[in-house]
Structures are given as C-alpha cells and as structure tokens.
Amino acid sequence: MNDGVSDARSPYAASPMDGSPDGLSQTDGSPYGASLGDTSPGGASPDELAVIADPVERARAISLAIADRQDLIAELARLRREAVIEAQASGVRQDAIARRLGVTPGRVSQMRSAGARDATGGHAGACQAPRVVVRRALPTEPAVRGSASLFMTEAERQGIRAGRRMLYVGPEPAAGHVAAALRVEPGTDVLARRKMLLADDVPVRIATSYFRLDVFGGTPIAAPDFVRPSLQAGIEALGHRFGHAEEHLVARPPTGFEAATLQLDPGEWVVQVLRAGYGDDGTPVHTLETICAASRHVFPIAQVTGADEF
Image (cartoon, rainbow, N blue to C red; front, side):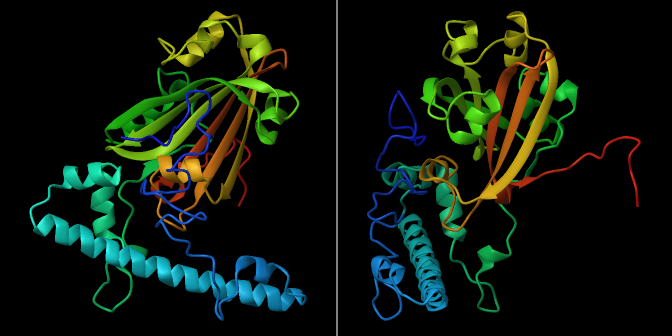
C-alpha cells in the first residue's frame, strides 16, 4: 500500500498521490484525474473569478462554482461506485481492484457506498455512519499517556483492533505552530517521528512527535522505528521530567498528504490536536501533532475537578 510518503527525507514532497484520496493520478488538484474546478457557471476560470471587481459578486460567483463542483464530485462518486460494483460482478476480486487503484481493499468497500442513493433519492452516504469511530479523550488520563502506546491503549479499551505504521523519522523544517511550541524559529530543522494509526484496518490518525534537534539529536529518540518500551520512557531516560502540557484543537481541510494517507473523500475535514509538553524546568520537550479524520472521531472533554458550574 502506498502510504502517501514519496520521499525518504520528507513525506511532504510532491507525488502522484498528493491530494488524491484514491491514489489516482490527478491534474490541477482534482482527485479524479481531470480538473473539477477550472470552470464555474458561465465557463469562468478561477483566475477570472479572482478578478471580479465587486467583492460580493465575486463571493456569489465563487459560491456557485463551489456548488457546481460538489455536484460533479457527487456524480463522479456515483459513477465510480457503479464501476466498482460492475467489476466485482464480473468476477474481479476486491483485492485485485485495490491493487490496480493503488488503495486498500477497505477503501474499495468505501467506494461502493460513495454516491449510493437512499429510497428518497438523497445521497445515503450523507447520513450513514462512518466506517469506524474512535474516541480521543482530552485531556488524556496520565496512565494512558504513559503507556507503551496511547492509541493502542485507547483502542483496546474501546474494543477496536488497533494498528500503527511508522511513516518517517528524521529532520524536517518546523511549521509555524510547531516552531512556536518548541520555541524555535519557523523553518528550523527539528526531529520528526511520524506514524499512521489504524482502527480495524481503517486509517484514522497521523501522529507526529516533534523534538528539538539540539536537545534530542543523536539520542535513541532519533533512531528509526518505534522507541521501546515507550516514547515516554525514552524521554525520561534522558533525564526529562514532565512539568505541564498545553493542547489546542483546530478543525480544517486536510493537506494533500493528509487526505491521501487517511484516505479521505472530497469535502472531509480533519481535526488537528497539538499537544506541547514541557519539562519541570519549563523546557519544551515534546510536541505531538495528531491529525484526526474528523468523521471517524469523537472527543470526550473532561471538566476540571472541583470547578464545575451550571
């Protein structure tokens, strides 16, 4: 399976899968191999829309173009569903279809439901439950966070078969929000440890741990594969003791890499959870960015004990 990682140095390099949830080749950002957004009602291109003088008229024209695009995506999803069903009816195995499309067999199953219509003529996919839903508690209780794997422990408690796959370990320029948490300049190389997390074979999260290279470079934390017995133990073995953490949630559209790796359909969003952990002396130690497929998660939020009010 192609995990959406095209380069050993960084998973954000351009690749044929970048931005394509199905792993199909694309042009102009479209996951279907042909640009869906290069015309609007009346045949205007995005460049032509951008120069409409009246900002309200510009917004109206863009809204119409977006609506047209969504209708086209829904229709293409229906046609793709029919093609998959036809292939399977002719005797082509699901795993063979998956190999030819460059996706997982589970993704082929999802394609079969995309574009399906219910008895009222609406899109059934709009009201069907996601393929899998996992819980991500905020804040995470210390016993879970200190376990060999936060996700594996969470999933076991929920009766979900969990899996994880390391995508990348190595230096990477820090994005602005990561740089702020680690207190370095944006673009500074930091150590990234990126893995994909699966629930019942469905990709649900991309979790990336970031560390300052001037603190953790050349240590066991920088070694490839998983740190054993746990990342937490590896950090503490280097003399760091937990002081406090801050967590921030942001809901946003996915990047191309995120959409491809999490196998998201067009229009699906992600929830970015950024946890910045600091040592007892205030030193930024560990920043964890978790990209969660929004439709596959619920986020139980714990209240502060002794501070509840109606």
